[in-house]
Image 1 (cartoon, one colour):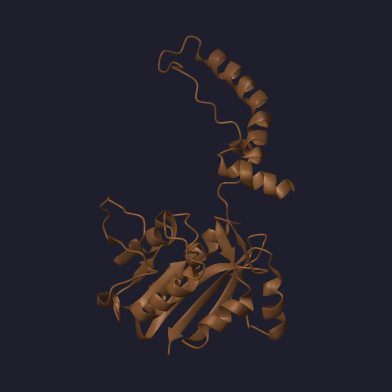
Image 2 (cartoon, helix red, strand yellow):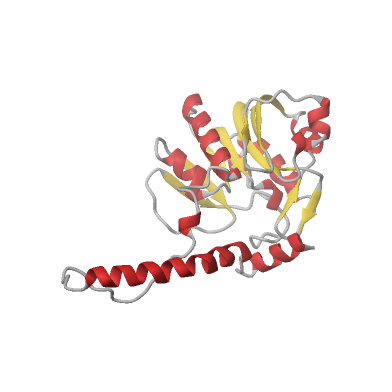
Length: 259
């Protein structure tokens, strides 16, 4: 009940955890404001021209290294760098995460159903619905990534058409885009299989493997667990598959080669 309420409030832009930290930080802000005003007396170099309270950062670390996205974005960008493809194409991954990492060292084409008007060096943006692609994209690239994207296809979150099989159509079209022998980097939420509408699907690991194994050779599998810890190069056993790597909401990270 609490987790459902928390998610609803968060979707409305109300984050109870952040509000609590901000309230906790208010006495420190008032204390420090008095101190800086006292020190500024007789000092003409600066004046306080308005208040901009930042209340919670004193209680946080210098970056969230337990973030699921941090681990997958960095790991797959490193693998693209190491494998040095001729062309790399991405479908829908985070522009301010994975795409930016890759653009730091090579060109990347980004396909997304949402339009993007910005011009950024090394990034080419293309608006496309990967549930329905033209034949001109078949056999288009030798390297393809899609990180935490297929779980959204067909749920309407990004103004895409409602389609209960959207994830299957997306995977089928990604398979068409990739050349035989090409690398496919995929990540998706893993855990007990469900839809949390309209945010995402969570895939049973066995179900996801059943969609991928006929078309790809699995080269590497890693996952980020519920606590945000990365587990690299995991050997999949029936037990691990059956309990979804012990995850309720983790990220499975697949590096594969198209058969």
